[in-house]
Amino acid sequence: MKLCSFEVATQVGRQQRLGAVTERGIVDLNFSYASLLASQGEPRPQKVADVMLPANMLEFLQAGSQSLAELAVAARSERGPNDETLVYNPGDVRLLTPLPNPASVRDFYAFEAHVKKGFEKRGEEMPREWYEIPVYYKSGHNHIIGSDADVVWPSFTEKFDYELELAAVIGKRGRNIPAAQAREYIAGYMVMNDFSARDIQRKEMRVRLGPAKGKDWCTAFGPYLVTAGEIGDPYNLDMTARINGELWSEGNSGSIYWKFEQMIEFLTRDDEIVPGDVIGSGTVGTGCGLELDRWVKPGDVMELEIARVGVLRNRVVRP
Image 1 (cartoon, rainbow, N blue to C red):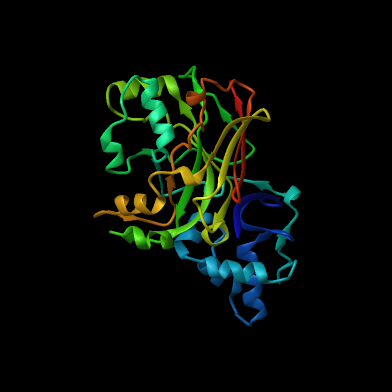
Image 2: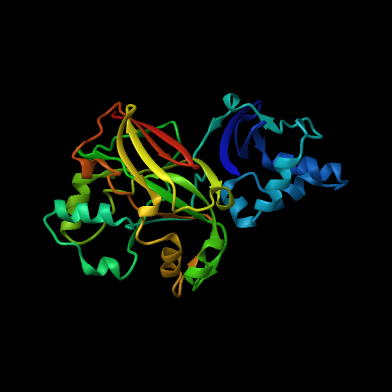
């Protein structure tokens, strides 16, 4: 199932809703579930639906409502009992980032080819410690954008870069999770563009702190949150990046060294993950301008695509 967050214009202003992308159109899951409950004789269908299958992605993940979402999608009504719109034509709504308010964003450094190239460019050897633990940094989680949204070139950098990543979204709370059980904690996957200010990042890394300001000013997720069951094997997905339609980056998620299960095991050692946490894979080999010595410019359109997940498209604009 492909889940999305969308915005629709109403007589009382724009409303953000949780949807499922289907052949019929975008199904409003909350209203569809309320309609289903009403048909079954529930006296307070909307109040129950608001608790059991909320209209907000983060609350949906916290409620563990995926099985109810499947029921809502299966319901065939087009209008609700109070004349609510249950199914939208995609052109009538605006897709947002699937998870506008993640609980946290932790970005790993999991593709060996990308890591090696970065150390090579700095004239340093690959550290043996990288092979001992899956390392990550915490990114900002308050400035998240979705597909087809413009990303503003920050005033503090002259080296803007994209990074092609696969993101896993946590759907269940857990602590001290062994890798063998970790996949059941993943609700689904998104394409992630970890925008980077490379000149600032370079200065941060020289003092052995960060990345921080070089990364946490904006991140893009999208276009959908594709459930783990629909993805199947997350380690056999082709990954590409096109700039203004030209292929720049090409890789496969199967080249990852540290798998999401190992990341989750490491993260949860005497610590907890919660629904809505986002775990980034780090950049796939060749998946950024830094590796290629090619740099995006204001006005460029970045299209990051991962098989079975979708295309995340963003245009760079400079004020």
